[in-house]
Amino acid sequence: MIDDSRPIFRPESLQRHAQARTSAALPSLASPRSLIGLWMLLGLLLAGGVSTLFLQIPDYVSGTAWIADRQGDAQSAEGAGIRVVAVFTPQQGRKLRPGQILHLSAAGSVVELTGPITTVESNLSSPESIRRRFNLSSANSSVINGPSAVVFARVTIPQGAVPGGSVYRVRVLIGAKRIVSALRR
Image 1 (tube, rainbow, N blue to C red):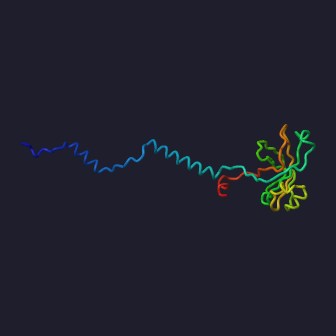
Image 2 (cartoon, rainbow, N blue to C red; image 1 turned 180 degrees about the vertical axis):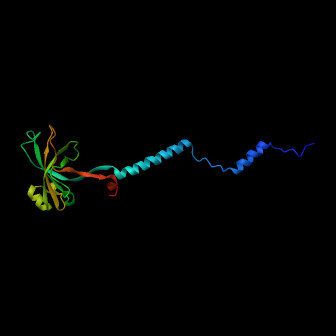
Image 3 (cartoon, rainbow, N blue to C red; image 1 turned 120 degrees about the vertical axis):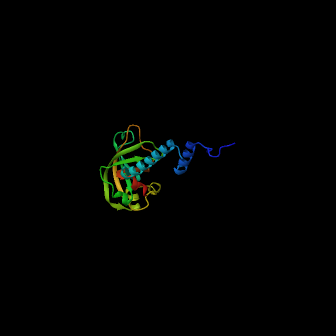
């Protein structure tokens, strides 16, 4: 016959079972390795966000230019300067000063010519007065569509790099701005 006073389970097993019911077990949703990776990703995102507040990028204004005159023909002008006329919007023209470096490039060209701005005219010029003053064809002057600031620069031509075309893109570095201000545009 079976002894009813003797329990079926061992006392240690009953204790472990009771402890397991009282302690809360959190579910394991991610492995420790993936948690470390997620914390690192969060740290990188925070570092990138903070860096946008302090890092600065160059601030350029862009315009259109053409060659006003050359000193001699193309071969004698190598190493010498060419006079460039550039036009900018009135807002951009206010930021330009003599001595700033003008970067000139033709469409589709990998060669970029540079030179200092020599003169920034204080008065704005109408598109028609710019056409007459610099004897521009209608094709060359079609990019001028409003009052413009006129800027003169002297650009040197490196050996073997004679610019082609008649209308050029120009950029002038006017300073630096924070990355956050560039993102707001």
